[in-house]
Image (cartoon, rainbow, N blue to C red; front, side, top):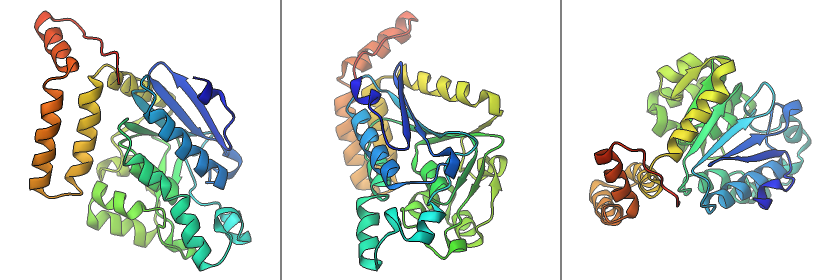
Length: 271
């Protein structure tokens, strides 16, 4: 618990029941990434994934916005994560912002994006990298890299294309147009759209629900879904047979069966 009480640069962290709440905390800059924020986010995500009490992770933004992506002032000043020449920038991206998707995709813990406002550029990508997304009706989404003469260097194209399909992803990246939360839901970018005042409660309900499910099976199911879009059928079936061999003999499985038969809610006390 003491780890989460530490001060993190440009990040607020709160452990509540079985959920870790991570808030990007640069509201004066629409929660645009800073070098410190990226480093802290990766560190907290990795630690939370080995915390047996954490069953879900929520990422949101402070104030009116979710995340504006890259800091345009830092870009203009060639400072922070945008300092140096081409080779240095390449190394900075690989060691910095690209560690966010590399970390999230390898987490066993489900990650929910609670999109409270604008999710733009790398902010839109961050939402796409999460396992599920709940958005306020006031949220908007845009892929604006080309508009400022850049490419999605954070790896966002990998995730968005798989999430909403080739055609819609191409449209978002090439036009740089903003879309509403409703449209984002219609194209599959968002799972739920809720009233602004209901956003936190609905997200908390989802996180609490995940905490009631058998953790081993939930973790392996997440990895199974991720594996399914990165590998062929034969390797996927082989992995699923191995996973099922583990889950079918786990105590979670038998607790769940007993709960169904006895019409009682089982308690799963390990991660």
